[in-house]
Each structure stands twice: as structure tokens, then as C-alpha cells.
Amino acid sequence: MSHYSFILLSGGIGKRMQLNIPKQFLLLAGKPIFIHVLEKIDVIEEIREIIIPCPQDFVEKTMETIQEYGISKPIRCINGGESRQESVYNGLKEASFDHVIIHEAVRPFVSREAFKALMETDNENAIYGLDIPFTVLKGKHVIEENLERDQLVNVQLPHKYSTKKLLYAHECAREDKLEFTEDASLFFHYYKSDIQILQGSEYNIKITKPIDRKIAEAIYRESILMEGY
Image 1 (cartoon, rainbow, N blue to C red):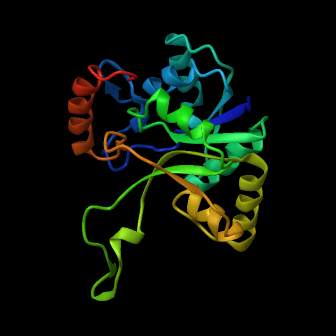
Image 2: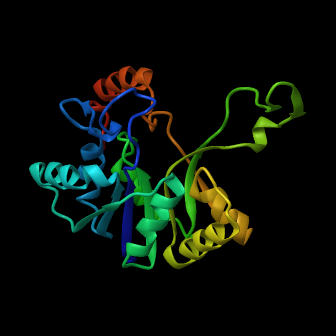
């Protein structure tokens, strides 16, 4: 059985939500969004540690909240970076195990089964993704190129990687001064190797805008009736 470090990205500061607190502290069904994720992780034996990059001013509050909800796995809260990429890099430097799973604190509807399936896939580097059900064109003010949507994927988390390989790719990106929006594109840029794509879930939304809170409450009401939530 492989053992994993788990990086829970909690670096957001709630700008798009127009909040004065990080959005992971917003309540969903009476508890902070990120606690919903941690409660699922807490019962997965293969995950041996949790690393949470978060805003420096909220490190103490994050740990206090975790203790309040009785999460038992070893957890370290560290300072997040100025960007998502830097927060992942900071987390990777703290990881103790050969394999790492990365997830976002504001994706509370991921299931325990999704984490287990990710760990059980043979490829050491794997992500979740969804087909894109709408037309996508390249361009800003004018159309520059048609894109074939059946060749595109909507990237979801969680991801899993070789810790050593992903850390090296991040170090290369820092040296090259390249910025990526998530880790699969960064990893592929440097290795050009296979990253397995598992079928994602439409319920696994990322809560970033005010409308997402309303959608999340509706999903929660439905998900409590679903096995595995």
C-alpha cells in the first residue's frame, strides 16, 4: 500500500466573493467548506499527512478550526504563496512521502470513493476531468482559432503525482519564470509524459463566486441522500 502526502490548497482570500475572510471559511450546511474535505480525508488510511498552504494571517485560525472539528491526521498549516503555483510549491517542499494528492479547499463535494479511485489507478500521475459540453473558441477581441471540444478537458481536482517529479517540475517553472493555472499543465510541460484522466463529476464544483454558494447548498441537500458523501 502506497502512502500519500495530501496538500489542501487554501490560499484564496475571497476577492471574487467580495469577502474579508478566505472563502474556505464560509459555512456550508453549518460547517466551514474545507472541513467537509478534511472529514473525508481523515478516514483514508493511505493518506498519512495533510499540508495546508493558507494565507499567513489565517494559519492560526485554520488550525483552531481543525481542532474544533476533531480531525485526527497529522496536519501542518504553512504560509501559502502569492499564487496558486507558489502555494503548491511550498506544500511540496514539506511533503514527507513519495506520492502526493493535491486538492482545493473549496471543492467540498469530492467523495471518498474519488480519492480511493485516484490512488488505485496504475499511473502514478492522474487527474480528474470532464468533457466540455459547449463550444470553445480561441481569441480575445476577435476569433483566432476553432478548437475541437472533443479534444479538450475541463480539469478538476483532486490530482495525484510523484512528489519528486512534481517538485522538480515546479523548480523548473520557477527558474523559467513560467506560471501555470494548475499542476497537470505544469507537469506535462516539462515531462510530456502520460497523465491519466479519470472521469470527473459535475457535482465536484469549485466555490469561487457568490452564485456558487447557492449552487453548493442545492448540491449539499441532494448529496446527503447520496451514498458516500
